[in-house]
Image (tube, rainbow, N blue to C red; front, side):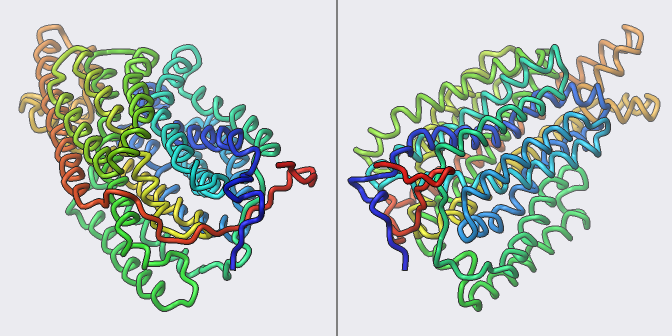
Amino acid sequence: MFSLPPSMSNDRAYPRRWPALFVLSMALLMVVAANTSLTVAVTDIQQKLPAMTSQTRWILDAYPLTVASLLLLFGAAGDRYGRRRALNLGLAGFGAASVFAALSTTPGEVILARALMGVSGALIMPATLAFVRVLFPPSERKTAVTIWSASSGVAVAVGPLAAGALIGPLGWQAIFWLNVPIAVMLLILSAFTIPASRNESAPRLDVLGALLATAVLAPLTYGIIEGPTYGWFSAHVFGAFAIATIALALFVAWERHVASPMLDLAWFSHRSFQMGAGLLALGFTAMIGIVYISVLFLQQHQFHGALRTGTELLPLGVGILAGSAINGPVVGRFGIRLPVLTGLLMLAAGSAVLALAHSGYLPVAISLAVIGLGAGLWLPNLADAVLNGTPLAASGVAGATGDAAVELGSALGIALLGSVLTSGYQSRLPASISQLPAAAHNAVGDSLLGAHAVAARLPALQAHPLLSAADSAFVHGLTLAAVVAAGVALASALLAIRMPRHATAAGTETGHLDTRAVVDVPVAA
């Protein structure tokens, strides 16, 4: 059995927990920003490497694919072998992979580097949430989870802003160089703030369960990413989904059979865990998808540079901070169901506003502000619901499950809304583009950016109607994608009606924390 040492009792909590929360939140912000910051670099990467749209989509999605595939494995390994060890190994690997990415000269090398960053991200993410849960007593945990989750939300806006400031003078490589000093700083700070933490009574790692979980998540995420390229009903994508389905059946059968499963399937009978994980995936599908198509609109349709685009995404971060600030009092009075429902309805409303963004920045700003304010309400409460649906001893796996939902939702949002936008764009292009040379025809059909590049080489009498038609087709695709995002968010809100009013705990408040500092000097209370 587990027992909490005196330092973890309600009246004598771990003394460095708030500085530790800063390190954990910054680590999460870095990992999430590594995904969102690249959205504003797509245009620069396409022009400088150069890379096709399909390659840039893989540069974006190689990261969440790897993260989602390995989260459960690394979350379970952290619970057994040490969460601080997993965190520090992840930070070191993240910095090294970022160096590789910055030095890459081909799209393939960048894709590989992003996958390696994903391996490190899969070590970091579940460890951060597990520590938040273990370090804080129940009376402070909701506040800590709110701060932790707000950092991931703010990263959605801060990442593109930092990237935009660096891309102009330094190029897309600067996005990756920025990770290196941050990772080093966090490694140093963790030595003084993060204690060792592990499940001392954990059984042997469920290796087969971990491999089967990876066999579910990897082809599932791969199919989501490749759906827009090959078609959702193509043999290529259908095969990936079929492999994931077979692996899922085997995973469920094995987890029910093994004495000490990696993922206790009984957790899914707890409504807090079930609804929390599911709605996290759906919420991030709509939110990250909206961010992605907003960036494409601002850069390719409105011709805004990377820095300006990053700045224009700030309403999302401001909204998340504002929503997080009012979340506590709202939950205290009404429970978690009302703020989650309200936040998801705001996500639907903000997505609908973006459908009106035919020109100018104002509709985008309103959309992002409304979506951000809503995210400040649903994000921390859904993360808390996942945690409350699991025992404290399995915090790493619980955190990994929530993180996997986030990564799958993010990958699906980029793939799904990107696919809808592209399909809508291509469907409205005039038949006259078939008269262009093959290379020019493919470039116009690939993206609005390609259409402008082709038009720049045509006589004015041909360029003007091409640009007018391409711009109109892009807006049509954007509108369709925003409507799809609104539909996903609205469906999520309807599901949220089934959430319990309060996230009741399913597990016992037990665990093990080694509060010795790195120098092995006992920490005073």
